[in-house]
Length: 355
Image 1 (cartoon, one colour):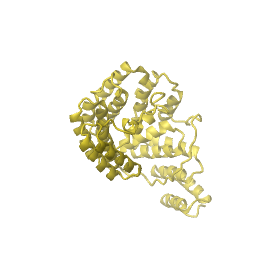
Image 2 (cartoon, one colour):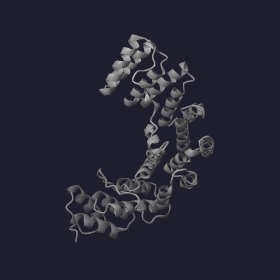
Image 3 (cartoon, rainbow, N blue to C red):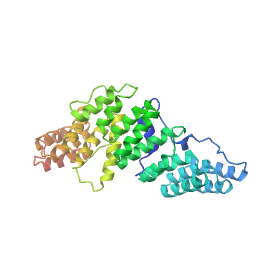
Image 4 (tube, helix red, strand yellow):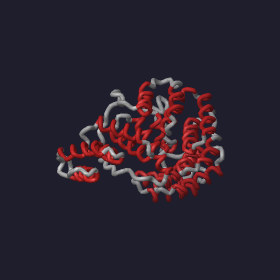
C-alpha cells in the first residue's frame, strides 16, 4: 500500500506538535551524513560517492548497483544498507529493499536504525505482525523509540487490534505523557473520534480547533470560520458513486483523507473528496455534510458544485441536482463542466436547455 509513512511524522506534528504542524520526524535515512561510517577502504568510499551522484541525477538503478559494490568492500556498514534499501524503494523494488535490511540485521542484530527502517517497510507492505515483533524491541531508552512507537501504533490501528492499540497507547503515555497529542491525532485519522477526544483532553497543546473539527464531523452544522478556506488547485470531476471491491483500499483512502482534513480543515478539495468517500461507505449523512461544506466554502468552483449535484442525484434529490447543474450552464465554465452538468440534467429528466 506504501502510504509514505515517513510523512506521517510531519502530518502528526511531532515535537512541537507531530506539529510543524505535527514535529517533523523524518526517517533516519534522510538524516544521514554525507559520508557513511565505512572502514578506511578507498574502493568502498569511491563507490559510495558514485552512488550518491547517481541519486542526485535520479539514476536510481545505477545508484543501487554502486551501493552494492560499496557493500562488497564494507559488508557490515549499516549506513550503506540503509542507503541501498532507500534507493530500491525509489525503484519500487520493495521486497528487495526488505531483503537488504533483513540481511543487514542478521549481521548487525542490535542496530536500532536497521530495526526501525525494516519495521517501517513491514508496515508499508502490510506485514503488521512482523512490524510489531521487530519494533517492540526498541525501548524507551533508545533514541528511535518515538519513531518506533508511532509505527507500532499505526500498525496496530491498520490491523484493527484493539488490545494492542491500548497496550501501546498506555506504554507511550506512561513513558512520554506529552505525546498524548500525537496519540489523539493518529486515533482521529483512523476514525476513532471518541478515543481521540479523550487524548486531546490530555494534550498539553491547545486543542480547541481539533475539537471543533471533530464536532463538525459528529454533529454537522457549519465548519468553523476559524479554519481558512482553500480553493481546489486540481480539477474534481467525480461521477456517480460506484461500489468499491477492495475494502482495504477504501479504508486506507479514508485514513488519508481524514489526515488531510486534519491538516487543512477548510480545503474544499479535501472536503469534497471526503464527502465522496463517505458516500462510497454508504454513510449518506456524513457524505452530504462534507460535500455541502465544500460547496458552501467554494460556491463558484464548478467541480465542487458538480460533486454535490451528483450526490443529490444519487440520493434521488433531483430538484437540488437540477438547480446546481442548471447554474453551471449559466456560467462561463469550460465545456467539460457544462457537459457534466448536462449529464446530471438528462439523468434527472430535466430539460437540457437550462430553462
